[in-house]
Length: 314
Ligand code: NAD
Image 1: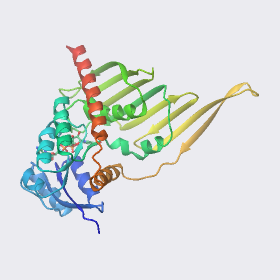
Image 2 (image 1 turned 45 degrees about the vertical axis):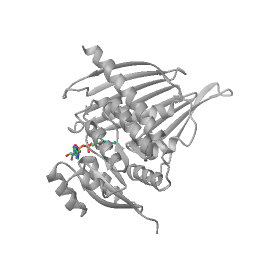
Image 3 (image 1 turned 135 degrees about the vertical axis):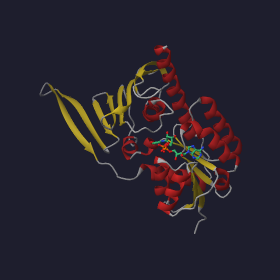
Image 4 (image 1 turned 60 degrees about the vertical axis):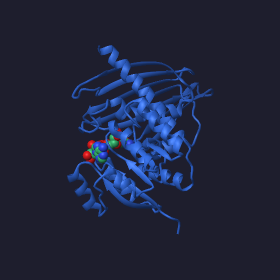
């Protein structure tokens, strides 16, 4: 049998819990242990999964080849640099960091040490997005809605870095053109940061993306609607549905006919797929840095949006 990857998880809060759950299902992983600075949470999760707890990040890092970093975004840089200095491959939850300088420090260290680094942009692994990507698209206009009920997590960053960054990342994967212009509005409602934002991106090829993100909604929604010549596609990333609507002008009837199609979606866990992809990159010695480069691009745009909104409110 192949040698397993000795794996650790740092930060076992809301999402760290799911990392453990999925890592335990991956054959190539030997989950050596976990660490969290909150001792009570560390004890609870260690007991729940019967997984070894370490009393410091370094003592865990010394025992593993790879680590998931699932701590608050503002801590990613320090934890990631520590992990890299301890010769570990890193899976860092999104966003990679809360500022570009920190992201670049991580990027430089990853490249210098030639380690594998993946950033947790889970929606790239959403079965809906994977299915959608099977065909080429030429979007003219996109509409993204990502609404979340208030949950009190990730309040250290704005809704743009917390939620909208998922759609920024997807849109930049879909639209193969640089961004020409950004219009952005946003408001603080319950936190010191932006809780609700609406953004219009215009690309060099004149495609337009209109994105709305809110963490103060009464319901959850993750939808992308995409308009191409004679075709409208609706992606429901939350409920795993894709519908396509084609318009076709019938000369004989002298009118537009519409054909609707529901696309079948494979059902699998996106987090497991994402972590397996990271593990496969380690096993195959594939330190393709594009995963991290795309994440930094999305962070740069997210921070630019933050600044545009801040300047308006000053
Ligand atoms: P959380 O607050 O529930 O958990 C964070 C945990 O990290 C806590 O248990 C805390 O005690 C621990 N911690 C804080 N600083 C630490 C340190 N220096 N060392 C060790 N442990 C430390 O937060 P969460 O919702 O799990 O979010 C964690 C990260 O995951 C954030 O970066 C967030 O943006 C990201 N996230 C990504 C997605 C996604 O869709 N990919 C979803 C949710 C959260």
